[in-house]
Image 1 (cartoon, rainbow, N blue to C red):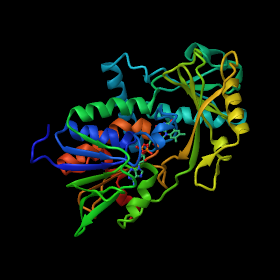
Image 2: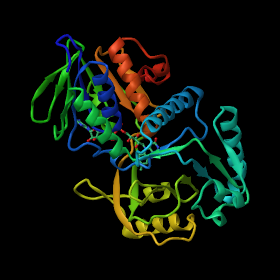
Image 3: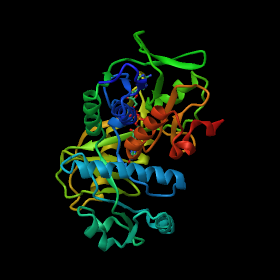
Image 4: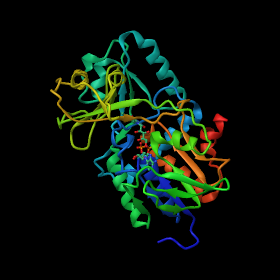
Length: 373
Ligand SMILES: Cc1cc2nc3c(=O)[nH]c(=O)nc-3n(C[C@H](O)[C@H](O)[C@H](O)COP(=O)(O)OP(=O)(O)OC[C@H]3O[C@@H](n4cnc5c(N)ncnc54)[C@H](O)[C@@H]3O)c2cc1C
């Protein structure tokens, strides 16, 4: 139940970022309506590898944000230890044979940041990562990151939306392509594709890959590097793998129903757009991706495709998130990010902070859209 004086917020986009923000706002006492084009998680959040990590070479502020992201998942995991869709079983990464020096540099960088990172030899990898095929790991070895995990975003979104609605939040699915409305330079609300108007004191644009174009309509430029990407899920295999594997030819993780979620950059290069605008990959590419996944798994299990999701993966032009208030348009807040699985909970929390307090959150200053001016 919200009070009549509560701030009214319209959130556009039913992916993990929009739902997380809406849930945090409702929790903080705002009067919130979440509008999304079709069903919840119909965008990137419905076809994500969702590896929870801060592995690799990030700038310090971005590393801190990602670590805070993982922290919020760990809290959720501690509070709800029986969740089947959130796991912290670590991550194992290795590079191609000739990229051993790069692997070591990455490890050194992670250690310097205090990220839990261990170089392991091939023969020791299985002790950390049951289910991995150790013979697939080159002599340079692999990096074992025990603090990493994975989440099934559609399950998380269902979990958050239940809480959102119990707190009085209003969900509108199948709203079509909504547009942001402004008056005299300030936000006034959102219009659904069907023409219904929703008045609001603040609007959060969390429409995934659609954010740059929607922001451009309001005169805000966000460099966009969004690629089209593929995620394949297998039929259940009930394999002992629990960790996330990132290997030169394939990345994979378990799913809550005992299957595997699999992606790879090389496979994305084979995506074609059909005349009706939909995306497809040749079946041979899906088969090759499954075969590559099988090669890094103990016992080389036969993997069969169950489902294939293809579409835009939101990525800002400079590779860092765009999160927070828009100085020039009072009442407007943006959320456009890759690694949105890792950031899902923290992004919603910090955006809600900015909206409820009217202040900039210190951790979001580096990620404000004003950096592109
Ligand atoms: C293959 C793949 C692998 C990934 N791997 C990882 C990973 O390992 N780790 C990680 O942290 N992240 C990963 N990501 C990224 C992560 O999944 C995304 O960053 C995150 O899901 C984005 O969530 P979002 O809510 O911003 O956008 P989305 O999930 O795309 O949601 C946006 C929603 O807005 C709706 N919408 C769009 N336009 C409008 C409009 N005009 N009006 C109303 N609604 C609208 C869409 O229908 C959609 O439902 C991966 C993504 C992909 C695709």
